[in-house]
Amino acid sequence: MKKLLVACEFSGTVREAFSKKGWDAWSCDLLPTDIPSDKHIQGDCLEAIASQKWDLIIGHPPCTFLTVSNSKNWAKLQANGKQQEAIDFVLSIWDADCPRICIENPVGALSTRSRMGKPTQYVQPYEFGHPEQKKTGLWLKGLPKLIGTKFIDVSGLPKKDVQRLHYLPPSKDRWKLRSKTYQGIADCMASTWTEVV
Image (cartoon, rainbow, N blue to C red):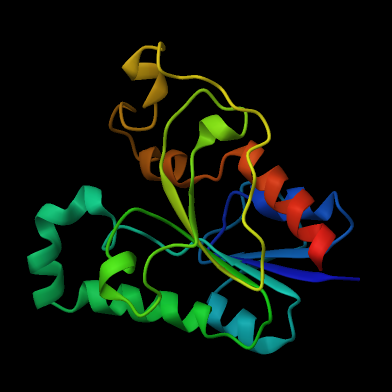
């Protein structure tokens, strides 16, 4: 059975999409999983990566210190070392001993300040059946690009709907809602990459 580790995933969305395709799919995060499962490791994902051989690793590393939406603080984050620390963490996942790796992150410092360079592709939720916009980079190693499954024209929709995540009111869970993978993208990952592994 093919083994997948979804690093830095508490939602369980990607893990469950691959599980439905017959994978031995695991998630790992410092937080407990939102979807109760005995296939969630609550702990350090780098330890989980090193603990066994994986056929595929999908990483959703935290973007707080990397995203362009926080660029006003980049000078401070570089000075205190937090941005470089975040980049080094991403590279630790990218350099794992695994033939197929995907790193997912929004537009930001990884493109210009890490040796990973520009993402292999950018995806948008509206290419996968969600009437929303959230440009996200995918850095792919040993994996084909995703091809949109259901395109939705969002050009005539209200901005508050298309950029729903941006307009979420302040709350203790706002960051969690903003970081969850869209179901349509998770399903496309599972369908596309199951075929090549």
